[in-house]
Image 1 (cartoon, rainbow, N blue to C red):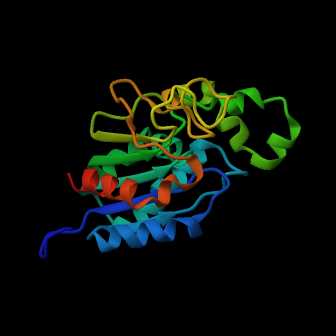
Image 2 (cartoon, one colour):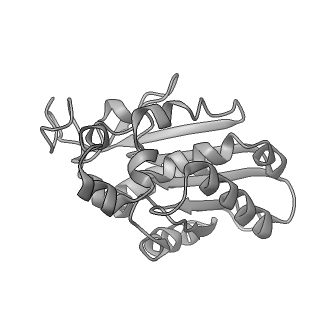
Image 3 (tube, rainbow, N blue to C red):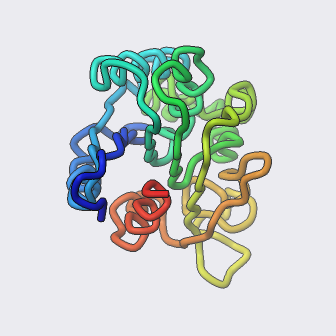
Length: 216
């Protein structure tokens, strides 16, 4: 918990593909109980590109913080991690906070092998819309590394004690949608927490680990 009298760290929470702000409210509630000034950011996963999501996130934060703050927390699930990276790559992000603490839950930081396998499958494109292309490995690679001002914690799901994950279509251990290896970034080794992709963001133990890191 944040001590009384200490300025609350602003934390923006970002959902994944095909999700919405509604699914973030349990997380926002949890973080607020821990003393953070948490708010949910929603974006149109099926209609817009990562660059547009990053721009909208910058606008959302500008309307919230009203100027530069010493620190900003970011908690993401799945594709939300790519949205955070698109935001952090924008020059305006550095003008909004001097440092950032970022927790990514099961992020496809290297793109998703499953998305690459289904690239030519029309129902996949119909369901995911623009996100079907944004989740491709080459798109994720184009985002570049997060800035030096950002400290990152990556939490990865998957099967405990196994080299094979929940989906045999994804190489190595995985959470059913994203491989453990796909979550990594240069210089940032994922911390394995296990479990399936869809519910990782609501698990109390995962959220407590995220809050611990955000608190610094």
